[in-house]
Amino acid sequence: MKLHIVIVEQDEARAKLVMESLHPLGHQVTVVSEVSGLARRVRDIAPDVVLIEMSNPSRDSLEEMALASDPMARPVAFFVDRTDRDLTQQAIEAGVSAYVVDGLQPERVASVMDAAIARFQMFRRMRTELETTRRALEERKLIDRAKGILMKARGIGEDEAYALLRRTAMDQGRKVADIAAALVTAAGLLS
Amino acid sequence: MNLTTLRVGFVPLLDMAPIVIAHEMGFAQAEGLELRLTRAPSWSSLRDMLLWGQVDAAQMLAPVPVAMALGLGGAVARLDILQVISINGDVIGVSQNIAKRLRHMGHDFGFSDARRARDDLIGAVDGPLRIGVPFPFSTHVELVSYWLRNTGITFELCTIPPPRMADALAAGEIDAFCVGEPWGSVAVELGAGVLLLPSRAIWAVAPEKVLAARHDWIEDNPALTGCLMRAIWRAAKWLSVPENRSIASDILSRSDYVNAPLDVVDRALRGEMVISAQGDLRRVPDMIRFFDGAASFPWRSQAAWFAAQMAARNGLDLGRSLEAAKAICRTDLYRENLRSAGADLPGASEKLEGALHHPTAVSSERGTMILPIDQFFDGKIFDPSAH
Image 1 (cartoon, rainbow over the protein chains, first blue to last red):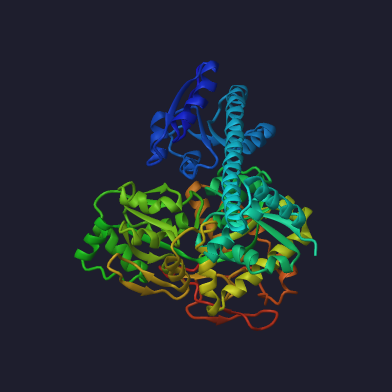
Image 2: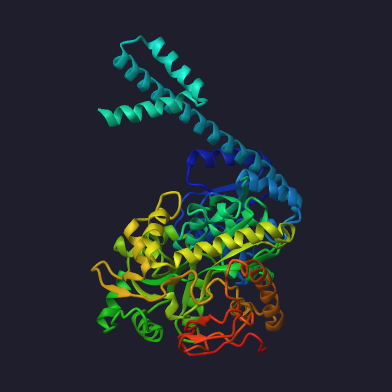
């Protein structure tokens, strides 16, 4: 039996990556990218499983479906209702939450969740790496500006300016970037 | 001093103030705690973070632990209510379209009479009313349902994250909302809607947010629980001093907390509500309350009121629901942990709700407790032991 899975994701590229991880399992996947009227949209599609990132503020809109008492609506159970605590813990750590139609076989859900969790873990890693890279770039820029200030103020060369920054950082037990930031701020105040 | 790190979760709203103040003004440090505050993107995420141990305690919609005690909405663990963080603080707003019709009918936007506002609203809408609320289990849902029941008005509650409420109203996704401040005022600021009532006009002492933690975590960490409760109680006391409000607004409006304009936060905290884009001002005493009138005491009767509403809507046994709700209110820990901090403690842990027509002195350990007006708009009295 093919499952119908809905992915709630505004970022097209990310949605595509999740889809690619679920297609090999032979399921039908629909992406919902619009957050307005989310609950109604999902209810109209009537999927077996809904995947949404935990950091998505519109997740609360899906909670009301989990409580739908309308006999025409498909009852949807929140994933933590499931007995598989390990899987739920992993899902929460990876930052993905799932809503699953009641009565669906646990093994079928487990394979979907495994694939989703792996993909969301990757997203999380990518985000951390991106953040690290961004910070490194900012630090580099700061250090370059601090070097410039030193070179101008003391009439020294680039290498010497950097050595001075390093030495000061070591003496004070601080990072070179911190010393550079302090210098740039101070220079801004004095100019 | 070595500080113990505690992770506390929050959703960006004015009523998180006691938690933020406990952290920023040193009340937590004085108890030996380093609070690591974690901002949650939604109530369901915060609930899950609490249930699965990613935070130790959290600001929580008062009805959420009650619903879980009743077995509603996927309960995997028991959450206890340690104390109430805030009383009141929500507003009901309507779209410009409905506001226009209300004005046309002669509604005065007096911002205090829930009965009149309701009757006029019935005349002003011709189809089903779509009302935005932040979560299926919330004070908002209970108050709106109580306010509009048996009126013949059909309404649909739509869950919308508070920071999106103004946009949803402007886009016509909803016709009205009930939301915690400052998000109602933000909707006015953006010209999306007009405020009709403060939530206190429906119930004068509706508990809004509570400090919640997992029952097993509390059992395993009795000393830490006490430290956290005292720090937050002292922060609430600090917030009750009018001179401290501008500092509080300054801190709360920051981008890592509520992330809303300073003047909007400040006005809501003072109860000076601008209800329309034309700048109509309404003063609301007790717009939001953190401390006075035993605000932080986790009255078993207040949780029981929520349980009674939920039981009626979901066809649950009333007696069992009331007992389950009362059991999670940790009045025992409140007494044990806050007595030493100087809290006055009421003689009883439950009371009639809605019976006080004026501020009333009640029996308490220090003999200084005066409870404020606690009326429901319809004058009904809720007896938590009658079923």
